[in-house]
Image (cartoon, rainbow, N blue to C red; front, side):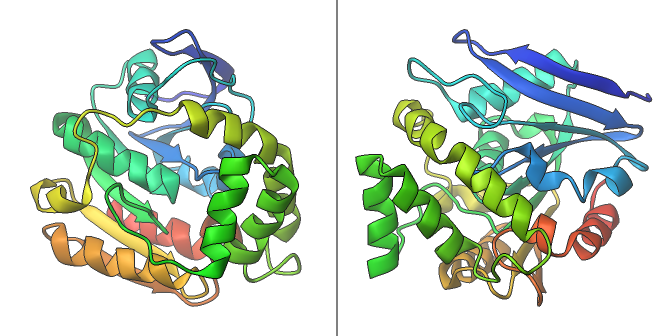
Length: 263
């Protein structure tokens, strides 16, 4: 099926709306961005990916053009609403950071609906992060809704390659636009039933690719190693010239890896 639709608003079970886009032709792929970002993260990846796949990307709840939550919601249920809206019984999932965490939680809850996983700089529910001054400050800024500090730390910790590296201007724009809205969204995001993916990685049967950037936060490399070790048959790749914002730093290499992995 070939689909090139304009932006759409997808209803969620609790009355929210998710801004989504669909383009391309072929087997379906859903792109999931990270916290404090929006679907512009995939701007440099979508054109080539859509030459081979039916590509869907959407703004997570409270970010980008999606509505802010006024009550508890589940990002796993939001993803299911996206698949259902487009009539997709199955799809491959490509998730970065928080989006990777959502993809993992979703495949454990609905394994029959996922044809493949690509986890990019992914986090995983159940993982205990080490304490450090920068991560403690980051967590405090989120709790206290200090949005200016949060945006500054987002760039310092996660966009370590800086503004002059590829995608730097867009990264700064996304972070600034979403800093205030993300803290509202995160306060309403509920923990899904049984959401603790790390002890259950061995149950995943979908073909899995794990990618992270060499300049990402060191704990992302630890998580990537855990994912490759514990998910049966998972393959790992490290990209030298990338930090956490890998789809904007090295889009050509990431797209190459995705096209070689996705069904």
